[in-house]
Image (cartoon, rainbow, N blue to C red; front, side, top):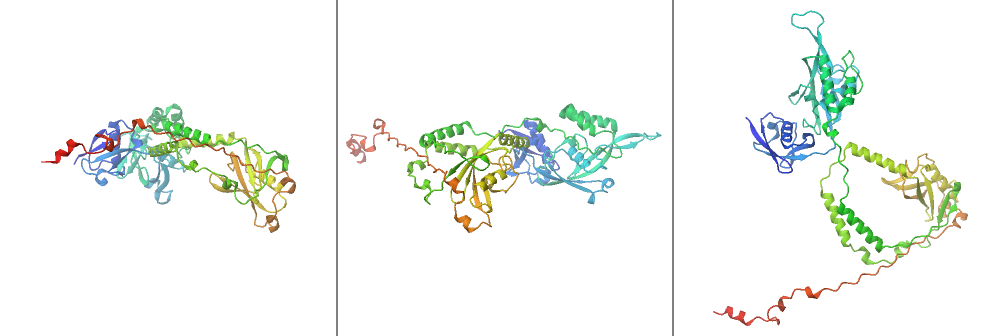
Length: 502
């Protein structure tokens, strides 16, 4: 018995679809997207805020007649689907149980899945099979006709070449697993014409260049098919240019600039004079700093203003802009966007020519040095080892990377910038090894001649900012109080007293 369902998109447009109990939900999605002018590969269906399995028919979906379905946008990144291909008896001799299992993105077509299973073994031929057939009453070897593959999914047969160009997502499989049963059916099309039809199809979809590479692998079938990996046909979604990655809104940029300007005006720090350079081990210029004389950090001894910790209007506007930005729906980055980000990240690393590294020793003395993009972990260890007073004692160097604390390998050949990921100004901590003696731990780490050339760490002075004078209130625009209304003395008027008498 036929019934109807209503599909509603985000702009409240409706599409009424006539259904039957055996109709697949993916067919409903495609028909609704065709009426609403949307791409069915980018959308899914929801019913009462519950995502529907598009591979189920109407009778198994639990939908009632006249149900209202929501058209929701899916993620741009395809999900992974486990595909099992059940082979027919004539092809089931190679794998265990006659079943092949592999994982594919949900944007993969059925034709490409068959071609990929073909390329896994030299004797497999699922898409370019041919069988001899003679005309009625004829003699001779006969003519080769195309034996087309037929896939059965949940009792649904996909027989034509156009049906095999559907993706797993179009059939309703965006996650989980699916079983494809493969059979072959002898067609009335000669093998030569079938290959030409396949070639013309890929030319119309992906251009002459792609079709030429695919047609090369789809030559006349021999006893052993071509094992070269097929060139996948581009889907319609791949032909579109992916959107630019999400960038902060103009409003957030404006408030960020305003906040940065306010912080710069509030915290105007005097420029710290550069300490004199000393020639260290390996003729490398270094700057040496003495350990602090007090155990209390200098930052804790600085006076501060309580008003510095009070949020301003710029802070509130920036926080509100960030909340609005985080509340917007954002699509996941596509594979191309992720590849572009990796390329841009590699380019940024390649553009770094040198970095400043500060080695902090256990006695709180420190050394600053500049390293280039050619320096390795061995160069850093050689510098630290050449400044030590206790030669031969084991030690380790550690720094905090983007993924957390990381040990620098002793005498390693990893480059500091490209391999270890150091950038900008990096702090490296010096730790004694397990076999270090107590005498070495108790004495200063650096040599005496280097400590004699050490400088004091100058803390920049922060100029005090005077608090703005409070703006006097404008009393001319203030509304009169309730007591000032009426006759001016706040008493009840005489004419009002007589209203209560009978």
